[in-house]
Length: 432
Image (cartoon, rainbow, N blue to C red; front, side):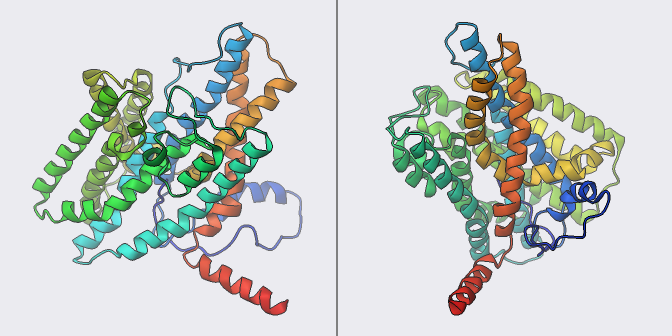
């Protein structure tokens, strides 16, 4: 997931000198974690509310994947076939679509502000930052997952289920995922870590973003440009329904930008509008915008109960509601009185800021954690396994994701980390 580039921070939480232990020092260190682990960024400002929106995006994903495991174990307990999904929960894809919206906003904003000042945004630096910032944590997780699958003896060819495509070996799947071409090359979503299909969609947008934004910003008249933006969102929203309607719900094309572009385009449109708002001066927070935020939150969750893929009209209407929810959450988070405080709260922002690491690591942890949990504590009935799954697997995923963020992802946020690593290796070689 993309990050808002903000003020430089060079301290590494893994190398900070240990302070003398004193009464209450552990509590103080825990309380201070959000400040110490805040993202390393490259521009002059940090907006914690954007990370608060990422928190809202990651939570449905975690709850969905945790309850799926509890749901299937509960069905098995009841003597039923342990398949299917818990339809009483909003689908996790609402969080993924919100991530796409945030990415569109974040990617577009520096291009738009640079154009407003009559400057060109450095495309080379844009791609270099994406590569050094996002790829190392991603590739490391893939290798860890491949090792776990191999050690478990599950190295035969298989697919993720639901007739998603042909059987693929874990090694082949890993190699295809490393180049972010799993769906186009193998016609199936990733086998090793299935949720990473969305990261491939993001990469597809990154590759096209400079070209798309260049064409969009070439329209100088703001009204005309935004009208084009609205049309682009609606056309992409229609494509999101036409792809599964004609190709089938689990066709590989559903795991490409063709079926998910509308969220990115909406983020670009909102970014364009918000850049003008900021240029005129930020409006004072208001309680009315708290109501907008709350309405957006309700619509956001409700749209997850009415997820439809192969019904054109109702699916399009659902996406319209979701798009309105994203816009309401965005404006409410930035301009509400209470909603601004909540989404910018230190721990909310920290978890949202670490969402990339949490997203990368949560499914491997949940798969293994659920097996251990239910093997050691065979909970009776249907409901208890679902509740236990949510209460145990979601916090565990957040905790492990935060550790991965602190140890792996956050150091990669340093713009000069490759040079620093190379210098350290050279020094080690000289000493040897």
